[in-house]
Image 1 (cartoon, one colour):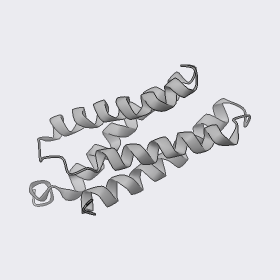
Image 2 (tube, helix red, strand yellow):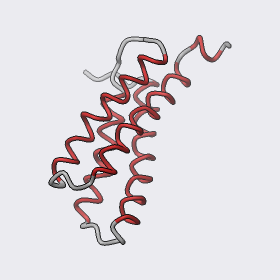
Image 3 (tube, rainbow, N blue to C red):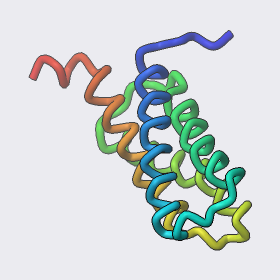
Length: 117
């Protein structure tokens, strides 16, 4: 059974929001000519990234957390990247950055040691 934690909620919401940012950026890059299914797939990829990062991983330092975010962002974004025939490198690389952003937000918002400093 999946436990809905604060970490999961924050990361899913961040993934959804970053998905919107990513879709807007992709639409601009492709001149508004993206197929609807690709727009949805890109947004959904960011949602999946949020779910993956929001899993109940063990507590680690900020640097390890950011590395984990980059790695998970890379892995999850590769799914979308491969479906584009390896053509949308910008969205792929943005996924790595988004993974870091999500982990950073989760770390700052859930780590009690950081809140008290």
